[in-house]
Length: 174
Ligand SMILES: Cc1cc2nc3c(=O)[nH]c(=O)nc-3n(C[C@H](O)[C@H](O)[C@H](O)COP(=O)(O)O)c2cc1C
Image (cartoon, rainbow, N blue to C red; front, side, top):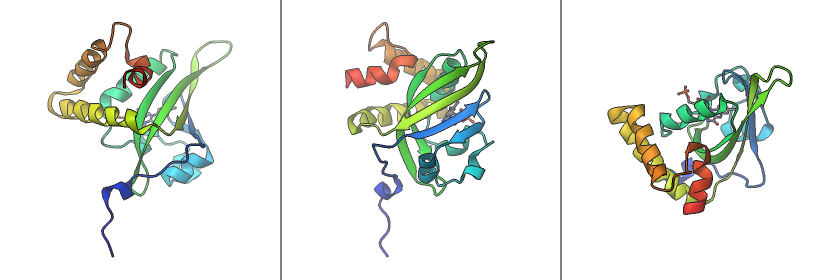
């Protein structure tokens, strides 16, 4: 039997299908679509009620999730490139649109929604290097240091560039 090459570990996604999930205001999964289950390898029962970090990949820098939560908990929407871990240890990269859902009367956040789709390879080239650098900084000096690096990285691109629009900006610059 031949040894699998590293590329075998990446799950090829169907560009026509979205991977969808919803959580409560704390990030506990309340809904997944069929494609989420198909790709992640988990059943609905294994996902509903669990924290969404069930698919967190160790290559993901903490700062991405820190900024994600800071943004969505203020009721703002955000896009982010995320590497996820499937149940069998394989991974998949996705472009994710996060949205907050508010109560119509109280305007309090009651849920979050995420739509994920495939990402173009040239964007991924930039992101893989950036995230590897952020992770390395975090492991050595902590998440404040990686956040500082990310902010500087964005500042170099222009005054109006921030984390909320980073993914669009990366599309624009590369
Ligand atoms: C709607 C929604 C979808 C999310 N989807 C993912 C996801 O696909 N992958 C992931 O690693 N984290 C996702 N998260 C973030 C997780 O809640 C969590 O913050 C992250 O996995 C980091 O784990 P940690 O907070 O335990 O460090 C999502 C959060 C929300 C609110």
